[in-house]
Image 1 (spheres, helix red, strand yellow):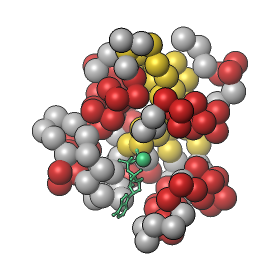
Image 2 (cartoon, protein in one colour):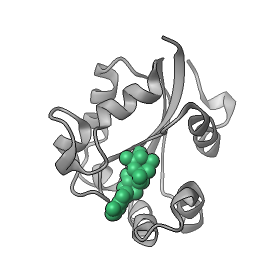
Image 3 (cartoon, rainbow, N blue to C red):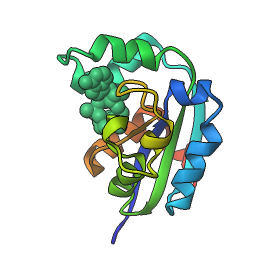
Image 4 (cartoon, rainbow, N blue to C red):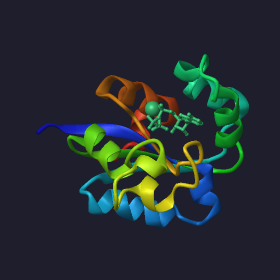
Length: 140
Ligand code: ATP
Ligand code: MG
């Protein structure tokens, strides 16, 4: 398996409930290494740019409102097969459909407020990492 990097975001519902460490613990226990991390509050324009791929979806406006409702913690995760492994640890988008023991099953409030984001491909991971971090901020 190849060493990959992926972009993770601990979403505002999780930071609000003081679950930053709990979510990070799940990632680390799965063998993912946090090689960069920052807490920030997205502006509306930043949220819209990050989720631009979803701009035609009915939930886009609400999603951007949610993602700007409080702080997020952006992380670069590194490890074997990191893109797929992170999505496995997060679980399905809808917590009602997420497998037992996943972040979203255990922590998410709803399909929207679902505690974590993870890049869905190596190509998107590279774009999303560059959205939040410069090369000098990533220390493997
Ligand atoms: P993410 O991209 O955040 O890792 P994902 O890849 O599992 O999640 P996407 O289809 O990319 O899911 O949707 C992006 C985000 O938009 C979801 O994580 C969720 O917060 C929100 N979302 C997705 N579908 C819905 C929906 N039907 N209703 C409300 N919000 C939704
Ligand atoms: Mg997605």
